[in-house]
Each structure stands twice: as structure tokens, then as C-alpha cells.
Image (cartoon, rainbow over all chains, first blue to last red; front, side):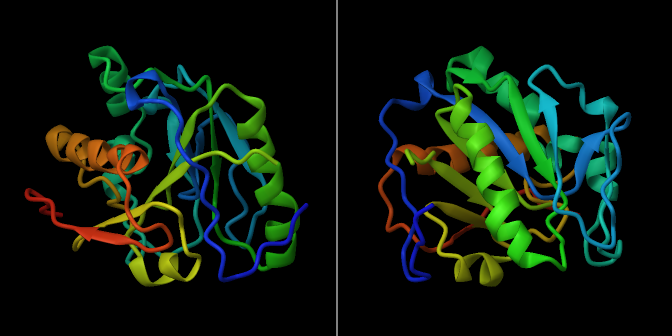
Length: 142
Length: 75
């Protein structure tokens, strides 16, 4: 894998109009399906895959940050606040975007093993996205 | 490695800027847990999302976070 200088901006140009693009969400806000293993709040380098058809009512949040720093109440009432899947669907219905991706990836975004996060997790998540028909990724962190 | 275009919505402009993201917006005043606003505020969520996605097709200097104002954020 190419090593990027810390001064580099990793920029991939967009080659088609928004109305033809398939958009995926990648979020480090600790979102996952209620039936999936929760994240380890002490630190977690794993990710979860959410289907494009996911219902926000089936989602929850596991995150180690205290509630007073990371307010989860808004998202637990309406997950679109951090994982705007319904809003993306509405944009698709209006033709603003081409499609909502068939899979979305979520992480917790807190780990004490930063080398593992950098060397393993991030490339693996990128590979998952590159292997799927996704034209662009919306990143959210909570 | 082909790469994938990304756009970030961040509530922490300072931390995000250290990573020199290719495209990123910080909705002004929005705090952690409220990236696209608040529960049930569909119009605000949509405005933030549209603005973020618009960064994909507009040319701005990559590598920094754009702080943008949005009305109607009342946490």
C-alpha cells in the first residue's frame, strides 16, 4: 500500500453527476443493528455492515464516549441525525442522487490500537467500498 | 489503488482538519451527536445532507473543513 505523506490530501475526483452516483455512508458514530454484536466501548477496530434496505428502527448505538460529550439521545430518537439513510432514500426518489448503496459500513471510531486501525481497519473498510458499486462515500462521525 | 471520492460531515472541525480531508463540512455550532441536526427535523437534515453531497460536484480547495451556517438548529 502506498504510504502517503501527512501533508498529502487524498483526493479522488468525481467523474459523474450527482444524479448518477451511488452513495454509501461510512460512519464512526458507533451505529449498528440491534441484532449485531455491540462495539467494545473500551476500544474497537471492527466494523459492521448495514444493508441498503436497513430500517432505522432496527439500529442502535454503542460508543464509549460519555453522553455529555456525545449526545446519543437525538440519534436514538431519529438515526438520520448521524446516519441519514432515509434522507438519502428521499434524494434517490427525487433523482438528486442515482442510488443508495447496497451496503454501508459503521465503526465506533475509538481504539487504543491506532496502528491496527490505520494499517488494518481503514484499508479493509476502503477495500469493501472499492469492491462495491459505490461512486462516493458520505462520512459521519456522530 | 483507485480511491473513492468522500465527503465528511464533522462536528469537530479542529480534529478533522488535522487529517486534511478532501471534502468536509462543519455545520456551524452543531455538536457531537448532531451531525445533521436534531431528531425529526427533516428539513434541516436534508439541507445539511444536500450541502455535503454538493461538495462532491463543486470545486473547493481540498484538505480543509468548510464551516457553513444552517438555520433551525435548536438542540
